[in-house]
Length: 227
Image (cartoon, rainbow, N blue to C red; front, side):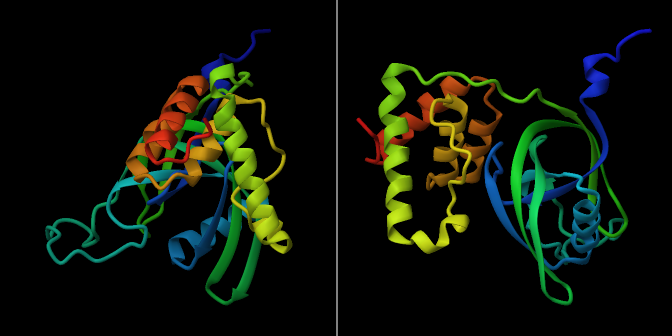
């Protein structure tokens, strides 16, 4: 009896994708308002099955499918949608249907993936075969980056004190992993007033410590550092 190769065990076929103009980090929380037909059915199916979908960041195009008057007559008439090949699995934690044709969901980021093959179905939904990254291991925070961690703790405390009645809507959610370089870097990256392209580059970095160092540098440039 032979064990499956790691590549086989870490591949997902026909993963539905949700291209957005934002970046979902592993361990992050993302609220979404779903109203396009191509996503209503997909999200409903994923929620019923407890299955994830993939969030990818757009490099060209809009989150909402739009007719392009300049599109070539041989195409489908819609504007191009181009997205980065590295994304994050999203698990639906809650789903509400406030009215017909509208879903409000909250998703949690799982692990990263790399798109191997992608295709767009006739109604506009993207699906892809993806290779999953191994979940990041916990990397202790180096001593020189502890002030960056402490600054995030202070920010969370301020948010909790400002509106204690809406803790479940805060951008920082338990379980808190204050000793993990990757977790602290990801939470800061989500909060930074930075372009999506920069956040995408941070998300794709394999070294959690390097990611945290770059985030710390950005905080210093913005005058938000913990030092």
